[in-house]
Image (cartoon, rainbow, N blue to C red; front, top):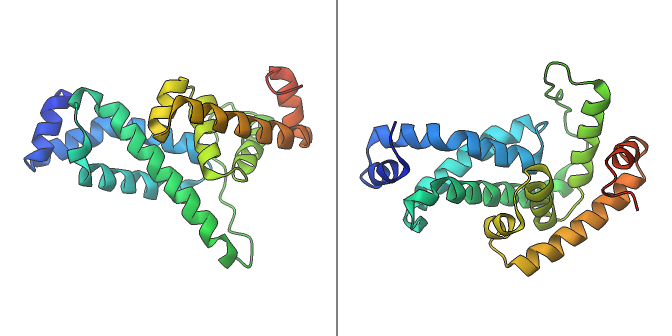
Length: 194
């Protein structure tokens, strides 16, 4: 297994093994970030955004200054690619004259129907948030990243990310309180119940 510096060096020289190693090293991180932002139920978009992230990352490799920060850098590229996809989807939304085809939810073994429904409704609410707030919310509360990491991945200051998160939390909590199923989950968790 190659270290990150060797992979980056190989990519810059155009070596095929480096592309495979880059994919193997980065794919799990990219997929996790994209699914955190978009939701696991967006099957049709996730594969495309993961692919677009790799294309974007390989095309902007010159922007990676420190090979030891490969994972964080590729996560930022994934977050920005997902953000662009959300904005593009919203821009195209006016073209939809009928509801999109519903794809079946991804369910893990042993997941209750109630949890699946709460998950679906959570991402339904997140779909209504502005893209910058949704990205911040997903990275902080779904992915569990620290504030400074979220700010870095969103390419904004810590103060800006705190403002975005405050707005996103307020919008999410307000909408979730009006949803019978999510209200129960919020009350159990205690975070957004006041």
